[in-house]
Length: 313
Image (cartoon, rainbow, N blue to C red; front, side, top):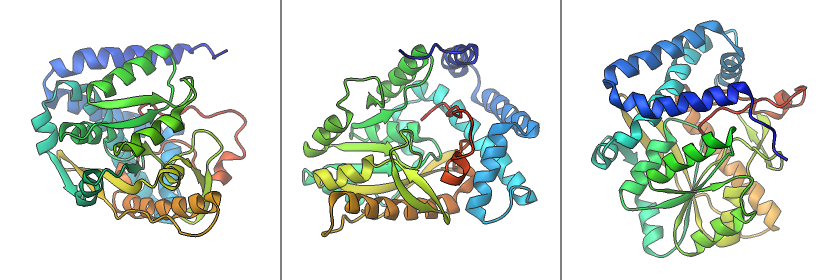
């Protein structure tokens, strides 16, 4: 039996419905200003999400959460996070030409080379920039792909978010509550020479692979590495960020799968290599890393209750 959605869950779902209905009808300059003001107000309140963001950014920077530089960086981070939601509401009304022309891409050649050879590609990315816009860009350039989404509450919000992403050209599989064959479906897509895109730095199952990340242990979802090892698909990290009023996307070199070792050992090596690439991307664009949840194992252990996840995964 699933838990009933809370009053807050229902309020959030209603807010998203209003956002998708209203924001595209208003001047972009006005709505962009409103989201920026909302971000600043939330930042000034120093609630739990902001404090968590600051603690996470302090690990990235190797300093204390109370460092004034971290406080300034968290303001930029909240503005970036709210920009993501502002763009989510506007994306369905944006033309494919605009989405494609405003995306600045580096290193995408190997993706097309692999796909042209019939080899599947796993794109692994941290929660940075606007991953929905990046998906719309990839689909808009003629490359449909499959992804997996966290099952949000209430169910109406999950279905609305799924419909939004499908409208951008993605095939969306639920992380939980589906037919129970998510991995098999993803593997099938890859063996057919298609693309799978997966958020990959935050484990939502508690069964992930332990890696060292910015000097401390965390768990990353095993899916990207396991799919690469299991199917022979190319595993390519992607780093997303905002570039002025546009978007930036950098693809890194394929993560090599070791030739020796058990499947578990190979996946562990692959995921550690992926974590190292993510470290580099987050270090270069820390303000666009939208990690407002506990991530590192030493932060997870003391919790008395499950911390709610941010919307938009």
